Image 1 (tube, rainbow, N blue to C red):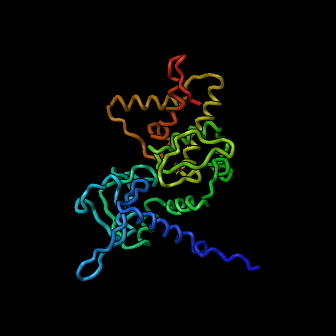
Image 2 (cartoon, rainbow, N blue to C red):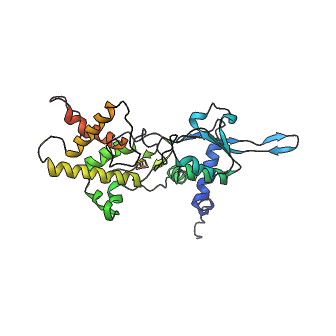
Image 3 (cartoon, rainbow, N blue to C red):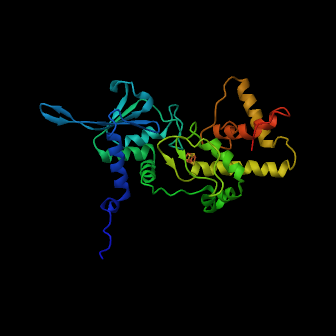
Length: 293
Ligand code: SF4
């Protein structure tokens, strides 16, 4: 009996298989595919009297679908995608490339599959490989507890975050309004997350570094509550501080949110999303509590 011969498709390097599958998926749809915030379209070579010219792939922000090429800044080097992905429209650094704050106004014309793959790697690091592995049924999922068990140093304390704290942190940090990946991981194999996991093309198989950093902040809030309030439902010092900062900012008519990963700042969007789950129920009149789990 002969040993089974290896599937030739599986012997090719993973990155190449992912690249080929992705460009085939894009090419299947003449109007193009939307991947997170990017519209990717296959462009067929122009048949001119002098022969075929052009062709390849064209990428732009999905919200720029109706803009003419001359209205956009056009680039042909896939490395330009790194610059496009770096800063928001208002010039702030983007620590999380899957956050829905990709700037607009650009057009990437890429000659081939390699160029497409390189540009996607800058716009959404590792996303095409994860996309491919999920479709192939090979994507490994790592739960929060497994990830936390590997943390050391200042992040080791996230191992103590409660199950309810992990769920709240995920609702605050991972839903579509703040991250376009589809959250596939759970607290552990027995405790699922309790959130809208999103419907985008990019799977998220494991808590990312931004989430781990946020979980550390949420654990600090939990410790503050355990240490200072015991059985009371009063506000913690940091909750009071956040409320004061919010009122102060609103009184000027100019509520500016802190940068995306500055979780120590009161007016950070994810921190506020967490507070809306824990602080808002405390502020409601008796008999009108929300489910602040
Ligand atoms: S862990 Fe959450 S924030 Fe991080 S990439 Fe996944 S879904 Fe997005």
